Length: 244
Image (cartoon, rainbow, N blue to C red):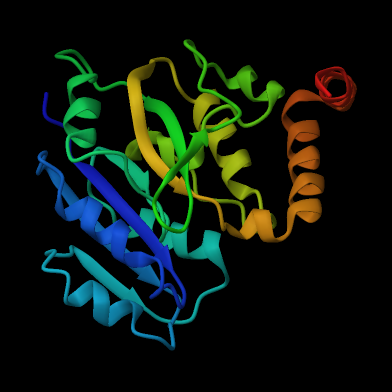
């Protein structure tokens, strides 16, 4: 089956970084996708760059919103594809055949609930820095995130008909909560066996690192229990000390 992907890019004053994102979408050899730009009312030329990119957008929305995850919820509401792909401004598909390889992993049977892959980190000059420290496991289950967010949000493709909306009470880490909820609803989770995204490390959660970690801790307590979460975090600390 040739699934349709809904690629959703959320932006706000992203003119300086959106170019590589747009170029990577336009370069995809696989063509069964729609592209949605959900902009928060940028005051720079983010939207103009998108309109001049030559990409035929399914939707360009530019209006004030209630933050990143509110904008993502708008994207979910407008999407019509089989899978959701959240590609942040500054991030890019790893290669021109990335979506072709992801689609090939679907196979001929019923659509898997989740497709996921690896993440490469790049600098502002698009040079490869390293593979993401937390690598995608061979087998992914909803309990896997006890070990941390093992799959980057941009490398996590969920089937649109099973996803919830993002919980807006979380300002920095609603994506962690969302991914766990999706995995809880899933029976068939497929590792696509390749690097799917180049991740530019300048995200909102990195800019608010301490607050993001505290929010993630609360999310993990909610899903996995307080004792289990505390035990795992003590292990994280011990492991970091041993590696020094």
